[in-house]
Amino acid sequence: MKESDFEDSFHPTDAEIRAWAYSGEDEPMQDWDILLAAPGNLPLLLELAGDPACPARETLLGSLYCVVGHEQSKEQFRETAEVAARSGNAWLETWARRVREILDHPEAFNRKDWCGFPGYATKPTG
Image (cartoon, helix red, strand yellow):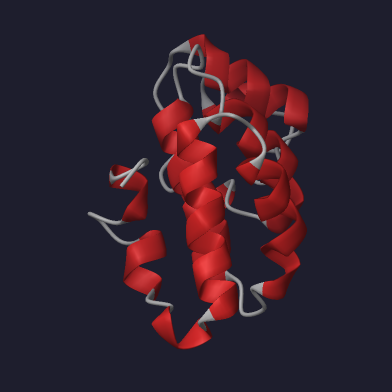
């Protein structure tokens, strides 16, 4: 999929993100992973990053980590982390554990771990 395949590439719909994620194609634009790193996309990011059959799984896992890394208030992720912890998916369970760690110990937060390379997304079960 190309950037022109989206009605509004800066505000892609869930259906457009899902179509791209399963297309097997490269990111449609530079910083696509960062664009997807928005709290409103959390349910979709959990769904797609948790699907071993999704070709874009690693990219979307990076977006999932980046959502947390970019947001000032981490408390909003508590409920989502609880859902991820019960998912039965090792990548999502690890993400949830890491979220809970920074909720319990905010002083341990290091943005580079969440948004940098290499960061947590490159160690999905570490």
